Length: 133
Image (tube, rainbow, N blue to C red; front, side):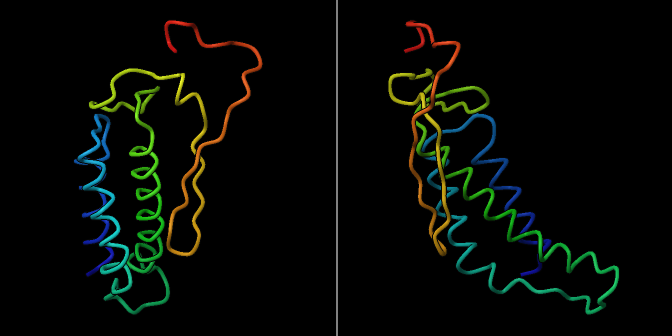
């Protein structure tokens, strides 16, 4: 698979499964497909052009791994957060839930795995209204 082919597939997953309007089912499909790409396609990405100078395809090979990692991180964190908040809108969880989700999502990569957790936020000036809880 060329880097351009992998980029195109990552962009399709981003647009169709992890776009503006999200759902748990689509996010689970995205996570599964991105994991398949990471394991099967990414190690076999190749560059047809062998020039060492001004080689756009080589740059694409270097960038596509970061694109895949970034989208995996977004999809995993969006699947974890079962609410809608700001630019994150879940069709299956359309309400903001401050009681459960007034927190930060923290993701660390440990080897090939993503470690997800939440951490509390410190509210210093504006407290959420009772209607938003």
